[in-house]
Image 1 (cartoon, rainbow, N blue to C red):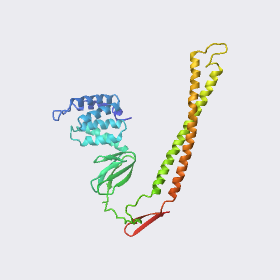
Image 2 (image 1 turned 30 degrees about the vertical axis):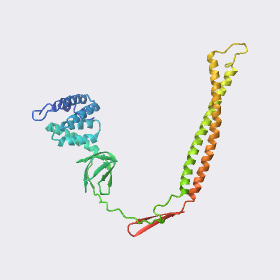
Image 3 (image 1 turned 90 degrees about the vertical axis):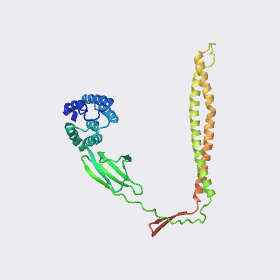
Image 4 (image 1 turned 30 degrees about the horizontal axis):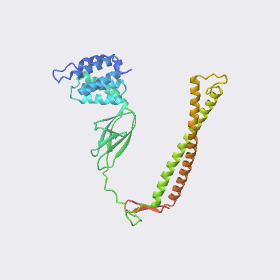
Amino acid sequence: MHFATRSSFVFVAALLFADSGMLAAQDAPPEEYRALFMEGSREWADGHFEEALVLFTRAHEIFPNARSHRAIGLVSYETRSYVDSVTHLSAALSDSRRALNDEQRQDAERVLALGARFVGRYQIETSVDGFLEVDGEPRAQETVLVLARGEHTLRVTATGYHPEEQAVRVRGGESESLTFTLVEAGPETQTPNLNLNPNPNPTPDPVDEETSGATRAGRGALAAGVGLIAVGVLSHALYANARSAHRSSVSQGGCLPRVDGSVPESEVRSECLEFQDRWQRSRPWIGVGYGLGAAAAITGTVLLLVGRKSEDREDLSVSCSSHGTVGMSCSGRF
């Protein structure tokens, strides 16, 4: 059972009226803030924590202060959003705007201690000013970083320094310091240029251009062939279905006058003629799909084979790379 239930909403009633006190000594909050705060307190007293959280958050956006931080932190604990709860309650205890009175501070400290059991709190220390990312998402500079239970990756970057990552596994209840000692990035190692071609701007090999063009054309033709064959298969199915339906309709006297001279109903005759028109229109596409599709597929296959053989005739290429200042390795492909 959570905090508000155990307290029988006694402290919720106090929250309803806490904002009305001490106004003579401090700036009064806007009326819209007070209305949202009171409505959120009523939702909280009724056990509607999600609704109360929305209203308190809107009030905090209008007039941020220690008491709105406290309200959001207490309700977030009820919704098991422990990271938000610890973050806002910590801010409530340090915020000087409409500071908490002794009773409110005791409530905030008590729930903060409860929520801290389910999160990890980390003091981030870096050797230089940098930027912090948590699980790939940038995070603002925070005095204490609050993380939910589970695996996390922290990364600190700074201009002119190599980035540093640390993996953190939060079990709950941790309060630790994490130090990031970034190493300054030195000048990049100059790699000797061992270009075996004396021409610094060599002319592209026409064989390579033909190869890439043939390969691209082959793939396109092969894809077109497959698509056309699919059209042929679909047309064949429509043709067979429509012709079968037309023959069945004709056998039942659906298209022409019957032997006894009677004329079929207009609806039956229209349906029969529609079947006839459908299979007659689909028949040409069978040849188009199968014929052109097969031709395109064969052409594409030939072009791909030509491109593959051309690639096999590629000239010798050599690449070299240095290893520090004393070593070098080269690789060649024939």
